[in-house]
Length: 408
Figure 1 (cartoon, rainbow, N blue to C red):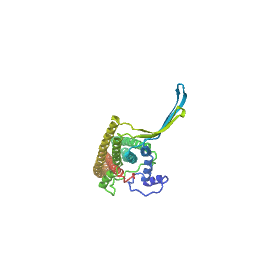
Figure 2 (figure 1 turned 90 degrees about the vertical axis):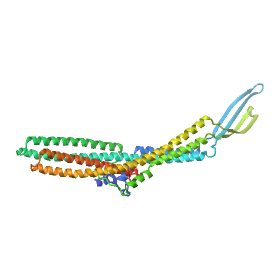
Figure 3 (figure 1 turned 180 degrees about the vertical axis):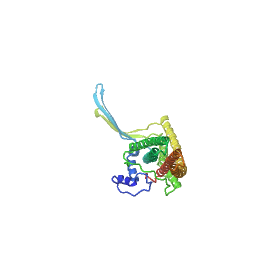
Figure 4 (figure 1 turned 90 degrees about the horizontal axis):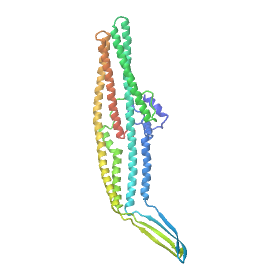
């Protein structure tokens, strides 16, 4: 199955270093390309461009040259008509310290946008991982159900021969036929779940080519770096924490900027005028300073409150990411133990089913006991697959969160 995956991806991708990952996952190089094309990642990438444009605007400042002029005609009794005009060219200038804060706020905005883009890629990877293991688990559950149908079908055929030879009662044939029908219904239900999971995966990530058959679930394994290192990396490399920290710092800068803006920027300019048809001409300097009041004070207070909120949100994000990492590690240990127990149960159930089959053939046990043993083995297999998938999901999530797989 892995070879089939490589053949699918090989025609699409350039050669690149192999990445250590489970054999039931698609090639990492292919996943990275798929994540690049995810709509959420593309939207977040576009917002980086918006943040860069905003940073450029903040660097340049909000003030531009303003030109103003009037043209009029004056009538004076006993003197006649006169054409008059005046023109003013002015520009506001940021007071000292404001431009540096604006530049810093713009740079932080770009950093926040970049971290949010990386977090969008992270979320897309988690979504892909969830849908992927939904498909793998559903496919394995369907295959597990098919094995029961094959066993039941062989038992029906054997019972039919025994009925023909008068070595079994008609009731036995009805029992095994009913068991076969139930197993077939189980296969149909499992196939529906498998097809639904595949359809969702294809719809959400259409750029990811899927093999005809889903790969079998691989045993969950702890990566070489170990669980504690994964937990540390999750916090250290979290783009969500970085974005929250950048937002908090940016809001603090904006609060300082709003405080400085309580003293409005002055405007300086040049005024030219001509009166009485040119008899009077002149030029002068123009200056204006808005007098700040309650409005500017309210804006400064608003910015300070938003900075306080951003700092609290940063702490909340740090605690959430750290708490989720610790919880995932603890849950994985429990899930792995559950899977090991389920695997041992499968071995015992399979041995029990084999003994029951042999005993029923020899007439040592009833047919009902054999059917029960086979159903129990099938249920144990389904439980083991579910436990295996749950543990594999968690270890994949931990690796994605730690940026050791699929995320640079």
